Amino acid sequence: MTPADFRRIALSLGGVEEVSHAGLPAFRVGGRRFASLASQAQGYGNLALTLEQQTAFVQEAPEIFLPIPGGFGRMGHTHIRLAAANEDVLTGALRTAWKLRVDKNAATDRKSRSLAKRAGTANRKRGKR
Image (cartoon, rainbow, N blue to C red):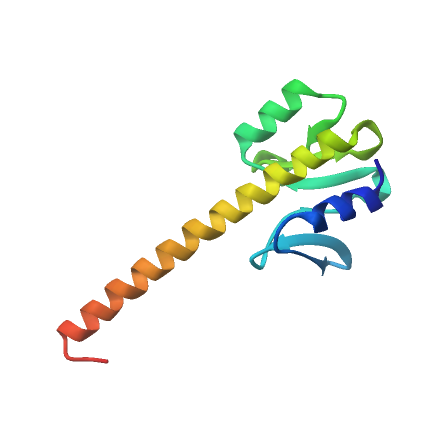
């Protein structure tokens, strides 16, 4: 697979937009990044996964997936070797990162609405609007 394939598949997922992050292509949904081509010059795409997802991907296909070196890798950020991946693997990996981001966005939205609702109730109890 190539960076163009990565881009095509990422943009085919619901609500995804391509943005520039530090001058490099990144993909986000709901305003939050889930993947990038920041390491495309080295032959990698980057995915934002959980540590559990990262471990599963690396154990299942170590020739394709590896943690990004340093702190980001310890938080689940994962390289995918584009040349070693096929369409199904790349699509599945991007869909996993995308779904994780969509689910996190929904949880954050619910929490924000709940906090705003409680704050509104507290303000009404004090006679504020």
